[in-house]
Length: 459
Image 1 (tube, rainbow, N blue to C red):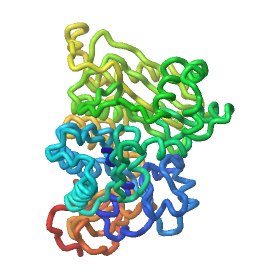
Image 2: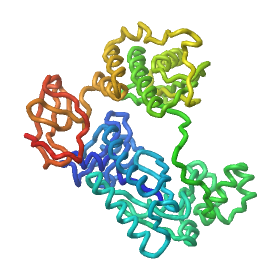
Image 3: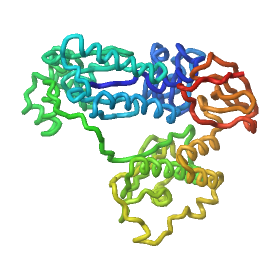
Image 4: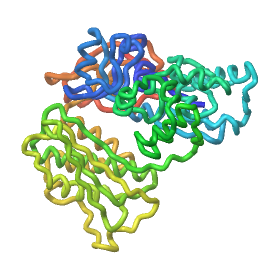
């Protein structure tokens, strides 16, 4: 079974913000160079979609569309509930992303089998349980004999669909589809296949494996041939081995200020180290990615003689790599990542002595000390990232806040020294809107609301 939570980020926002229910919502980067992460189904009717530049989504969507910054803590909380439900159904769950998973039903605690009607009721009960446990989130489900076919099935009847492809029906379903339906066939491969007159999966299935190998090489060619015949032997695996961890930031304007870039690297190193810690991993290779004003992209990497999870070490190497790049023309994107992951670390102390404190020139940068001190607290990377964001651009649209007098709400918008807040929550009615000075000491960022709690009155 493949399960996909529908328009997940946007659906969580609509659940937690009752005034947005039934209205177009776009989640992603809200600046001039932002990219859409998720669009609600209401926004999709106007052409908004994932990976679209936010400026294009703004052009297409009507006035009143909510453009919100992501709240990853809220998404993780709902994802955790869903994944735990899946694990009560089967011990073998492969979580692919925060909103997507495969489940092996052959070893389910109560195997539904292929009996007519049984699988339909089993999946219906599952999605109803998810809806109740998450405050109304919907999921689309596909069941088939392989991962590829199950994923295709889950996409056939969105949102909230339950599609079952029984054994023996695979080719009938698959062959009329575009070759883009095949896992691993992107725009470049599809364009190359098109030069041979291959448009559908059925067309691809008529090409011999030998010819596909001659065109695409042994591994890719043989893989295309097998998938075109619905032959997918991949198993559901409970643990997915991480190969790399990285974070990126696309800037609203090209950045030439080295101090700004240093602050960004500091924030990124804290976040990367936190993710390493959560995964109980250490890394040997540090990589910096820089996209210039002309869209050219450079990467620089270096490998350490030891594996580390220390954010100061990651920062130090990132700074050294960035120093080797010419940024005078301006950067539109900066990224920091680690790879060469291992479950074991040999501390730098054994090679160079401690020396992993933040360099003084970093400590002297504006706003950096507050970021560092916050990052050293529990869940520090998330707090550091929020602080760095607020230093740069103020309150984020969609951000959870609490006012000493008016209670919990979220940022409706900010600018010109003011911030507007809508006071409502997942279990309240649509609430009132009030505006405050941007530095109002009674207004503070807060944790995400719990949709399971009894609401307190908004005023």
